[in-house]
Amino acid sequence: MNDIIEKASPMTTPTSVTFANTDIDRFAQASGRVAILVGTEGQLDISGRRVNRLTKGALKRAIEAKVDAGLKPGAVFTLAYPTGMEAEAVDVICLPRSASAQKARAAGAQVGKKRGKSEILMALGNSKWAADVTLGVVLRDYQFQDHKTDAEPRTGAIEVMCNDPDAVSAAAAPLLAVAEGTFFTRDLVNEPANVLTTTTFAERLAAMESIGLKVEVLEEDDLAELGMRTLLAVGQGSASPSKVVVMQWNGGEEGAAPLALVGKGVVFDTGGISLKPAAGMEDMTMDMGGAGTVAGVMRAVALRKARANVVGIVGLVENMPSGTAIRPGDVVTSMKGDTVEILNTDAEGRLVLCDALWYAQERFAPAAMVDLATLTGAIIIGLGHENAGVFSNDDAFCNAFLKAAAAENEGAWRMPLGQAYDDLLKSPIADMKNIGGRPAGSITAAQFLQRFVKDDVPWIHLDIAGVASVKTETPLAPKGATGWGVRALDRLVADRYETD
Ligand code: BES
Ligand code: MN
Ligand code: ZN
Image (tube, rainbow, N blue to C red; front, side):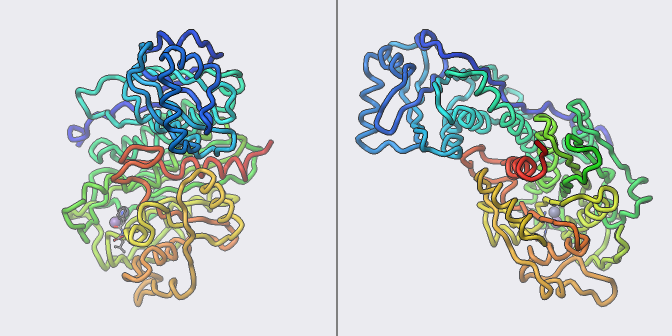
């Protein structure tokens, strides 16, 4: 078995950023890229004026042309191979005080995208957006290269020069912690299924003990003992053992009920006996995106030492067809005790989550609960790749999440729940079926989950099938895994669960 598992590859970490006082003498010698700021009317600060002198006015002339055409906040343009400088390019960022954090991040991302392996020397003066620009650079500067044998190590440094480096560094620190959590999620989601098995996934999570998380790995015996038979049913056709990993961050008041984050971690979804078509099946390496996002948020809250109690619970399984796999028509009993008639073995995510959700509530009595899952193809039909589907039993909690997602520019759109949808899950022989038919496929999946949520627990279900991994680049990420939700959930923790 082990010989078919490739060695777990090293992880991608964000390039570390250094902050220092502005030294305009550095621009002449700087190699790589230099980034400076410009106002919408073309105003330059002391750094920009120095670069302009070095380029013998070429910078000003380029800016004037842009100003005439209308220079918009957030716009970035590049002066390639500027005369009088060693630099390969000067990136000119238009970012007035009236811009927004999101504009600043998107502008930084354009610089991060262009850099390749080059160094970046950014001069951000007294801009109020310095930390956000930095986050944008770092988030977009992600490349998943662990399996490229000819990949060169990324050695180029990122340096930020500004008027108050201590203040900018302090403001950037929690953002860079979130970037590291986002990279962790992206790596997990991008990793192929022969590398990221249930076992190596659990190992990568257990390694987070080193940053202060308490991590437990529940093995199949433990899960059987707990009665998690729907979760085990999904993994029973695979050679990889099913696992549940519990990650605790206790940065809040002792004994205060935690926020629980629960993730679907199907390391590969073939559909099982209800086999998926061959075309595109390789995309199902990302079917652990919910678990990957939970892991990234846990990493972020631990790295920035959030003053909150957060528990992350992920169900790690592989959905394979085999002689031991579940069959359509099988009836299994969940940890809650409700029985499920499994009519389609490809509707497996809900079978994993229902036991994980129940376990979260029984063990931790959480203050609130968010689950994340690449749960349905139907959510992609409904919302495309722009928005995750948001389902909730609690308006205030849901609105707090939607607000956090909007602030982080992560698309999220609320969908309805209701008794009529729940009725579609009725089974003639068990307590419920695991599918509700083609109409409203994402909603009936959510209804299934809600059957395992206690009435008094505020709950949000995020269907991230359309947003976890995409085929075209997004403002803050190259194509592939996005890390969607790490920033929104980290912000939800900060807004709603942190004590001062
Ligand atoms: N993992 C899939 C959902 C999915 C589809 C995620 C496309 C990402 C991209 C899920 O397990 C699944 O197979 N859902 C079925 C449910 C159906 C059988 C009721 C689906 O969406 O077709
Ligand atoms: Mn499936
Ligand atoms: Zn799936």
